[in-house]
Length: 245
Length: 245
Image 1 (tube, chains in turn orange, red):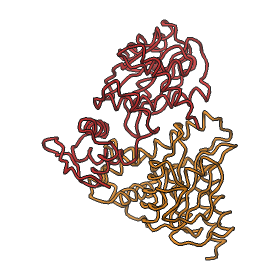
Image 2 (image 1 turned 180 degrees about the vertical axis):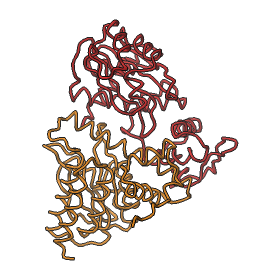
Image 3 (image 1 turned 60 degrees about the vertical axis):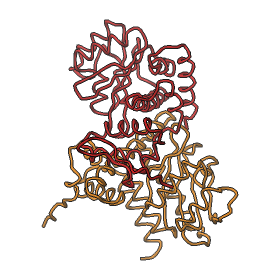
Image 4 (image 1 turned 45 degrees about the vertical axis):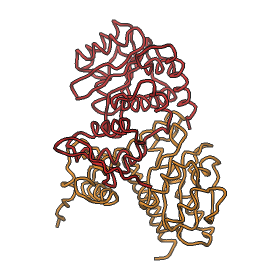
């Protein structure tokens, strides 16, 4: 497939997801996964600014990415922190062991195998509500086309958070962000239960939730809520429906 | 984002706590923050049990008491469903079932009632109720403030249930807006280990962290790495004491 058709397919798939009553976490997870396929990056993640002013992780393409996102939150330094603070993109930033700008973040990211970072702001009418992080395991610049696509995907992520609201006051935006963050917490609670019950990794626990959500056409957050409330057991998540003929 | 609103909440708490009341100042803060006439925090340890944690304003405690007796109303609905309730004119309650509640409210001089779930992920501790003597919707900004306040209340309830000294509450709440995601995963794991609801598991995790002076995130990491667990039979903690990096 040509590069253009991959990009088009990605946009179509995400747009398709945004038509009905969608699950935000699910859409953002698709988005970060597609980032790794369409742009030359190895890991991608979305962080949102909370009503408290700090950042919270909301979606990531891999566990190592997720650990780094959490590390940026804890250390209060890193590309995403700077990008959200300034509202401007960070592009083609190579990591070094003796990084003076991010003395704790850079060596940590390098031990995970990352060599370069990019971060694109998610902006809404003058407010930066979060950022799309893109990490690469090899040096060398992203092409200008890639950067355009990446900013486009960051804008799509912003639109996803609007959840069909055509006009959005600051108050309503805060409500959406609060709900989005709470959805992520529900998913993490369910993942812990699944990990314990099935002795699996957190990433497998998440995959089980997503697969069940797809198979049963049920929202991801809804499935996770049912697990936490004990209506759905982790064992039941493993049962795949029989294909219809 | 609304970092300043969260700061406002803590400044108000600090000021009001200095007056020496033992009752948590949360409801007083909610009234000051939103500019409404009354507020109350109710806890629902099980769907049919409701207790009042605190109230502020002349009618708040009486009206929450009436709701407990009736077994129906905005606070119970928000606690049970996890959705916010807006009753902008109680002369015309939105649900026929709430007619008795509405007449109690009107008799107490309350014309509008609002309730926001006090939740952490899928855990619903109860609700934050707000009351006003005049009819009308809440502005988007006031709705957002109420949700931020409900998040602060949720973390305060968690700390109180886990046995935090009341004097430490404010410094405890002054951390980041939300808990580290690993805390939620660990709560999910403990819930399965000890066959308890995730709500109780989160409180147990917090309590163990207080009682032993272990930082909450460190304890959560230990649980996820299976260095700390709860014995299903005895309910006792099994802590190998190993410290993660």
